[in-house]
Length: 240
Image (cartoon, rainbow, N blue to C red):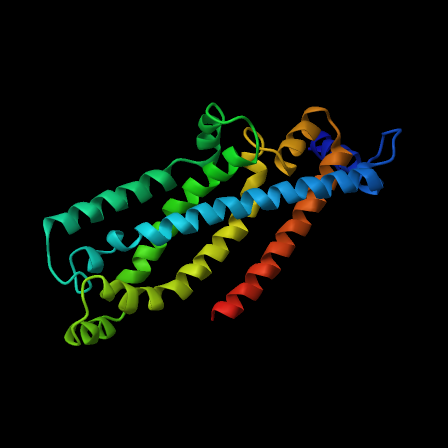
C-alpha cells in the first residue's frame, strides 16, 4: 500500500513538471499555442461528427417509428412499412453497437489518419444513438394533431411534414446537443488511433513520458468541455 501511494505521489509530481529540466509545458507559451491549435482540430472533428449524424438521422428516423411505419401516422398498414421499420432499426442497432475506437481502427485503413476518420467513426456511432432516440420520440407523440390533419385531408407526405416534424425537432435537437457534449469527450479516445487533435498528442505524451505535456492537454480538454457545455446550454435555451 505504501509503494502504491508513493507511485501515485510520483506520478502527480511528474504531471506538475517535477523532475524535468525544461519549463513545464503548461507554463510555456509556445506549448499553449500549439495545444490550442490542436484544440481547434478536436472541435472540428466533433462538429463534423455530430453534423454527419444529425443530417443522416433527419432523413432516416421516421421509418424507424412504429406509428409512422404502420400506425396512426402512416395512413395505411403495408408490408413495405414493416420492412422499412425493421431495416432502419437494424441499421441503428448496428451503428451504435460497434464502439467508436474499433470502427476508427477499421476506417483508418481506408482514409489516411486525420480528422475525417475520427469524425466518421464518431458520426456513425452517434447516428445509431440519435436515430433510436428520435424514433422513440415520434412513438411517444400525442396522436390527436395527426388525427386532425388526417380528417382535414392531409396526404401521407403532409402528415410527417406538418404533424410529426414540428413536434419532434425540439426534442431531437436537445438530444443532438447532448450527444455533442459526449462526442467532445470521446475524441480523445478516437484520437489515439485515427485522428489528429489533442487525442493523438495525448497518446504521444504518454508514450514519451512527457507528463507535463499530458497535464497541459488535460487542461485544454477541460476548457473544451466547459466551452461546449456552455454553448450547448445556450442553444438548448434557444430551442425551448
